[in-house]
Length: 287
Image 1 (cartoon, rainbow, N blue to C red):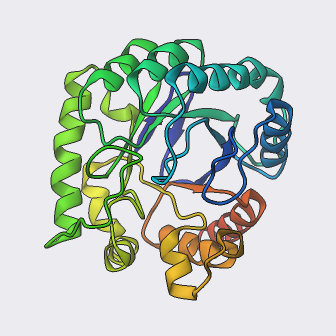
Image 2 (cartoon, helix red, strand yellow; image 1 turned 60 degrees about the vertical axis):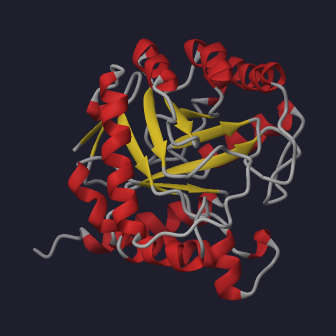
């Protein structure tokens, strides 16, 4: 299975890719937001040195208890980081892939302003309500991540329930892949994200992680966003997201067992060391 980004191609099965999270803004559920562009670039450089294969840069929190920034402000912040990205790309550890840049945004005005200027992957948490963002990806050559959710971002969806969450994901992704392909996005440039914690309750999240392999019939890499999630806090009774890294590692182990290809995390070093160790054990020569 191939994943084709703007200027790179990854082949799976292979060691999972680790995506480091950089939040360019103070409003982050995990308390790791950075308002200073220099600090954001320093964090990205540390994550690359720790082995991150992808940096996911965002300038608008998905938190539902905060008003959105203007599209102009969000785009300006992202473009400031993109301008610095070429100088950051050389900072990587041995064994890491040539770093890729993921642009974390969903508003089409921001996507249209930013993606032509840079970014290998669009991390769109909107659930692709229209084909507009897909068309921009097709025009620029960027890959498209389709995340499952219900309703608009930044709006609480705690009331949502499913008769069968896995069937819901199956139906959703079939429809959204069709939209993306009709807009010109190659199937090899699509990534699927089950949207842990987005419009889902604790039983839904746990079942997705338990039955993730049911999504492999789409033939697309699956990104599992497990870092410091609310469901981990619920299981471990840890209200502070910064205390959830051990639970995050546990979810990474489970995700690897289910064939996830990409993991989006805050603690890159822990994720890289865990994934590389498991991969070495599972793929060690027996001869």
